[in-house]
Length: 324
Image 1 (tube, rainbow, N blue to C red):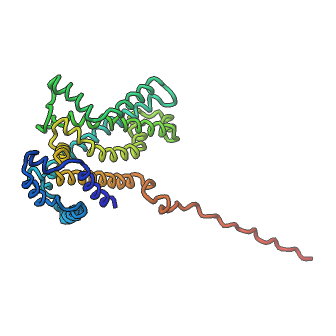
Image 2 (image 1 turned 90 degrees about the vertical axis):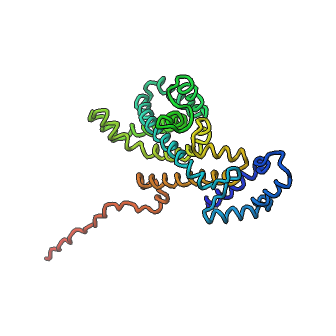
Image 3 (image 1 turned 180 degrees about the vertical axis):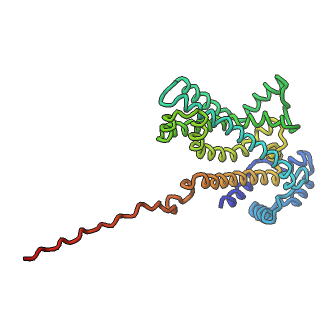
């Protein structure tokens, strides 16, 4: 069902964009005869229902089409850019989790039971502001400071491991702030549980107290959010990739939409949507393994634990009657 809606959306969205792709490709001064001939060759003079059926038929055979402008198979374009986009999104998710979970736990421990209200206000204000700033603005700021200003990192392209630092930081800052807020809430809830009170009473070392006892019980919701953010980072990397001229799918997506390159734009929308569906499915599977009670249908299908068997009531032995 979701894939069917995605196929329809990928076709409809690009055809709703105003403009003629052939005029974009051949130029405004191209003869009308050449435009008409090219339009007929590409099947763009067919009615939209016929074009959609042809599009679905090619998809069923694994054919994503050929670019109007470069005449390059769309499958090759995706194969070239997808690994770079995925590697950047996965790295940004990893960085966000590594930074956000300790930060959220620290904020919870420092402000537990109303202590240090100034720290709580600063934490809430800073993380709220960080979530509100778009990724591309982070990218522009990081580019101006660390590349153009200080000259420490490469400004664009993929030239080595250091090329990942600025785009990954731009992508991870807002998700890190969001996960930190969630981790703080989860940690505050766990700090008031009986097992944490008992651990405090035993005067365990901080590393064992928070790392061994507290951390595993706060990870379920936090990792779930991290997995969902991975899907968002894959699609959100489009603008960041354009800021840093990253050789991923984002640049080709913007170019295809701007040029009205129907086959490439449709395929990019389809790939991004499919990636989000796959990530959400994997997150559900991982969440079910970590916490079976949170799996789908667990409230109705999970067997309840058997209680203690009832002890049968034994009647007292009859008292013999005395005769006589």
